[in-house]
Length: 182
Image (cartoon, rainbow, N blue to C red):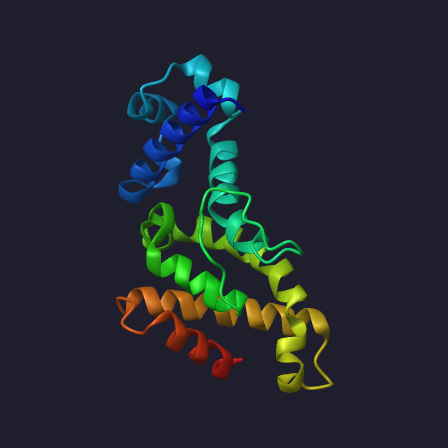
């Protein structure tokens, strides 16, 4: 993707994020998005097939860096740049604290269930890769899929609690709370 295409895509994302922070996803129109991004309808559709596809792409852009950050080369290939800490869960909390791409507004907006759904999908693979961290806490009678689901929902509820309580705890402390709750 060339620089012009990236700028157009970023403008569309920015306009969409602004709208999502104040309006229900189902009530946002493509016209509002293109007006906010100052692009034409054809330009919008050359980047995104539909508004739903835009939402999916936005979520992938927002979450892919965080979940891909701990790959074998430990390279960041996406929109955020940072130094990943030892714990991938601490890494997630640090991104949330920094409010990368206004992710807090999206997770606490009236559209938060849309974002949490994508967040959980991405979190599943991460949790699977980190299962050894939780092995000592797992009962032998629990099916692995149940255990993975439990960890995901514990993490998501920890994030929601932290955001709702104005993130008073440091990322290190909230990570510790998460590990104690699992």
